[in-house]
Length: 155
Image 1: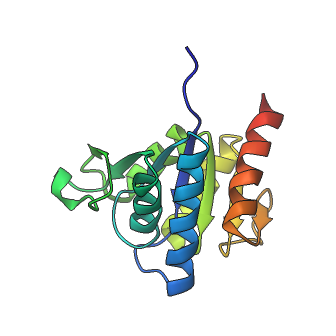
Image 2: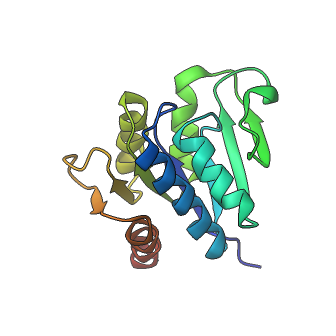
């Protein structure tokens, strides 16, 4: 039995209107490709991606920083409670087979750094493109296609 790809969608809890729309579409596209979406489970980019994925029939997992599942956005299908604060970013990067970063701040950068250290593909959609090792995309479609292409290259 093969498992679906696990793709992380990372970005800040505060997001622009364009970033929200991009993350929403990334989530929809991931569901359409049968992927499981993993994220930090809160608002902003995380909420938008989970909403898009969930509304399209996909599975969403939120790795939460706090001590209760109630902090998860309403589109998280499986909340994982860690009570670890920002340290949960390592779990997100470790769990995902590839990451798509949409906008984001220093928390996003920490997830990118851990993923790259682990040798995992990272795609930037309006987020930290100047970091060596990141593949940049201009649209949600390009970002999702790049993530899957990079996974295939890794074998």
